[in-house]
Amino acid sequence: VSTQSTGGPNHAADTVVTRWKRNGEGKVVTVEDQPVLEFVAVYRGSTNEWAIPGGRMKPYEKMFDVLKREFSEEALVTMDETPDAPQERIGNLLRDHFNLGITVYKGYVDDPRNTDNAWIETTAVNYHDSTGKSFSSLPIKCNEEGHGAQWIAIDTNLDLYANHEWIIEKVCYHRDAYNPIKTPKRQSSQLWLAH
Image 1 (tube, helix red, strand yellow):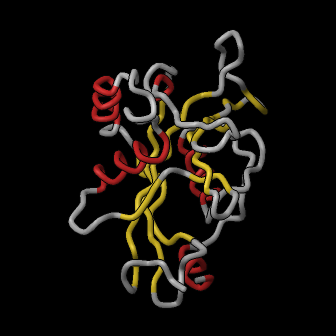
Image 2 (cartoon, one colour):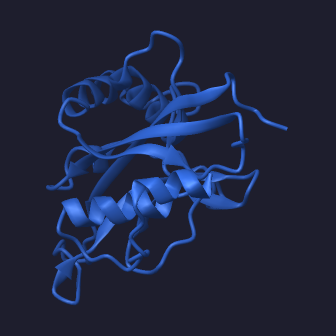
């Protein structure tokens, strides 16, 4: 049964927030002479997989607003959960930094909810914290079981939700970072044939 809201493409946005993995001395960790990235991942209990924060666009919603909303809702501690969280600073940081992203992927998503008549197409935008002082300072939502959201190092081949590995691989390429995923390259026409 499809859970898509409309027939044809259902547009979504994925927010890929990254930083450099650092050791205890604050130095960037490298593998094969390339720096290692970490990204904010959210746990999808329905599939028991980690995923990039993201979701569907509402009618007439702007891409920037979807990226900010989905990251805030899925990955950040809210005022209700932590009353002392510096919400104004969080809001300002998100507003300032969400203008600095680069689009790393735009197209079809191999999502388990897709059908022959309705499927998800996403725009994935990467926001990178190169200094470890912007996004790294945000209060990430994580429970005692390690679920919710957390920073995950991209130093081993990851088993992520849908085709999020492809998106992470593209981020590694754009940031000239270590890439353990190295999935076979596929033509965009092959994506549609696979659908």
